[in-house]
Length: 129
Image 1 (cartoon, helix red, strand yellow):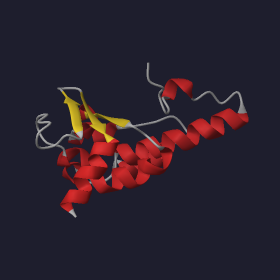
Image 2 (cartoon, helix red, strand yellow; image 1 turned 135 degrees about the horizontal axis):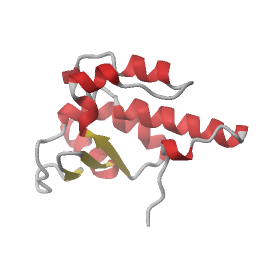
Image 3 (cartoon, one colour; image 1 turned 60 degrees about the horizontal axis):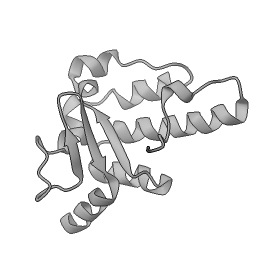
Image 4 (tube, helix red, strand yellow; image 1 turned 90 degrees about the vertical axis):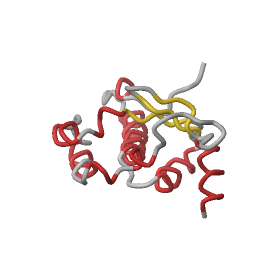
């Protein structure tokens, strides 16, 4: 029932204006996914009015970061974003388990994904400041 902001399945280069918007959105999504802090994730996504953001856990293993590739023209961006130490990504700041009493911004986490409520993350970061 929720609309996706961008997915690679929607990035078709056949329509120039449409593809340019999808490319912009995918770049934003990639920058958020590989951000180095939760504050940076918020700064990237807040102007886009994103409600929930999904992190893919398996993409943060050292071997996955080394092998990460993307279709052109986004591969250069992905290579740059994934070149950092695996411990330096915002994903690593997420709690290991969902505890809505402590970290209400993490609404779901399993062996594949973690879902962050962006409004709750903003509240959490304001309290931490």
